[in-house]
Image (tube, rainbow, N blue to C red; front, side):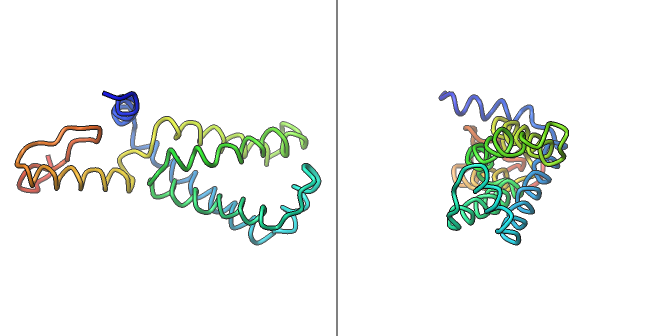
Amino acid sequence: MPLVQIFDNWSQKHHRPWMDMFRILLGLALMVKGFIFIANTSALQQIIAMNFGIVNTAFLYLIAFTHLLTGFLILIGLATRISCLIQIPNLLVAVFFINSRAGVGNAEFLFSLLVLLLLCFFLFMGSGRFSAYFYVANSLSSRKADESGNEVVGSQLNSPMDKEGNLR
């Protein structure tokens, strides 16, 4: 069994429902931050120009779009690990280069650090049961089981339904 499947099975066994609430809140926070970046582009441009000397507006909109897209994907629980992997470099820059200059007690620094820690956590744990990924994976497993007449056991969770469509 490939290492990815072993890791995925472990995270599915150890993922608790309360973790999904943190994933949803993380996705909402990233989306809100993306909307704030779009609404206040001049402030973001000033922060980036002051720290890095870059004044390209396309770069600013790329940052905002990344926050919006990855935040939405994390919110619904689809491609959560990939979204976290894409977002971690943004938060590393925010924590270590931008917000650390304001001081460790700064609210923006603490928020960025919390979001970075949650991104690292969900990079390893995945999306959980209350996610689009879980729904899609189980509907595919259910269809395969219905077509073959056998129980499908693979890298995904087994279907929570029996052959008649009743929940187990």
